[in-house]
Length: 611
Image 1: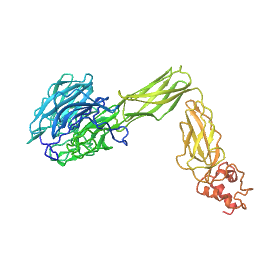
Image 2 (image 1 turned 180 degrees about the vertical axis):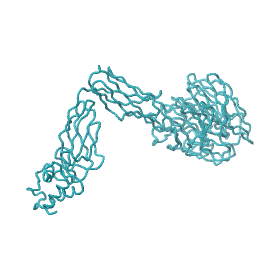
Image 3 (image 1 turned 30 degrees about the horizontal axis):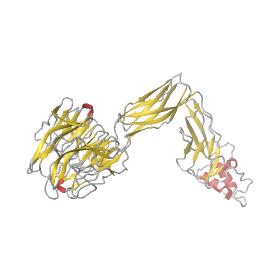
Image 4 (image 1 turned 90 degrees about the horizontal axis):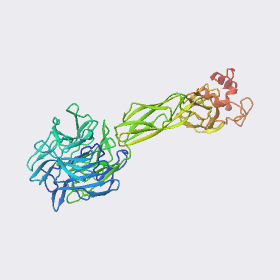
């Protein structure tokens, strides 16, 4: 095989990590898939600098397996296995790979790690190993499975595990000598239960150095390269086991990538670093796939290709690689090999929320809640819902259940005739098998409508109330929601805001109130048995308005501080001419006795004052 270094020409091949169904991890950098604004943090470096290694996580720890290391001035194949614990940020040594090998790919499932094929020997006389190495995590021991059946034997394949069916998928790769290379379009699946390989339809086009993922029932092969001179690929192809066919996906990565690392985290697929041999490039960029599109993630601290990556212990980590003699953090300036370990931390994969925090029944009946489930950084898993702490006589039903994230569901709590009146906190729990998230809702079982609330702010006759006012009131026993009204007249014939179904004991205006106005507001409480009477309204003036509690009347009071004249009514008259209400001057402008102030009333008074 040809390999390109600063001191010679070699074909650079990437160690590709297949997606693992148990959270996988392999990294010298860690990324937080649930906080895309986060950063990669440099962690304890891998003890042995290596590239072209397999990096695999089982959800708790991360294995860095084999690859290529340095001996004197030579690059040599390695059988070293080192294990990273992200929680403790420490490394330990695992059982050595039975045969030293580089250009490895691997994945983990059901308590075992699978590493198919590898390259031994030297670059001038390589040996291509069709061995399937199998590592048992619990015993720290290696064994072998049936040999890879294809010829010639490729390395740098896309590898992914389907844990539900105990299958290992492999596709593509490269084989050859220092004078010729052969890029493969072959694909196979290994059944770990029967220890047998089965040929799949060929890839749409040969590629090597691609990343492998298994997600949503598909084997995805992302990026890579079709030869040693063309640019790398950003395309993704998918194998569908149910139809036994390949298809090209519409969504492509934001960056062409070869020799990159793949990992899964929180439901997102990550394409990490990489580069291209013929242009001596290394990348620090990261792409994530949320099930429908690829988007950019925070970049690595150290640009690298031929690295590995995986997830474990709430971290996704990027480990090892080759930085083309750039002497990056924990990378050797002479060999270009890296010990670098960066990780990104994440805490949850989805969130359960309720748009209906409280619902009620009037005796027996149904209380309905609207739920939403949102993924974090591309999580698209299936979540099963349940209700905890149900009181006697109450049953719960979710529709649908389970819920594909992102998605929504309706919770119906059915209250039987034997349920005691009262307020109950119900815990709604969502679980995807590895992560559990909760939210609380309140069920009220009532037998009568609530009483009217007591208004607090703005208080009656308050002045200089801001235009973005917040109305508050005291909680009322057995109230589920509240209705609020703001009007320009005391009879609430000219209502300017009428929000209903408000949870809690406050409401902030959504559109700014008019300045220099006298307004009125009131509220009432509501539950499943009915609504209370409206509370007695509070009158207030906004910034720049008159004192609504004063005794200023046009007929007998000097409102402006000078002689009573048109100035005293100008504001109010103009307000009505602008179709804004009178507020404080209601009594003076009710000229026609019908208890509704209108523009005709204003015009009569304004005319009397010379307007």
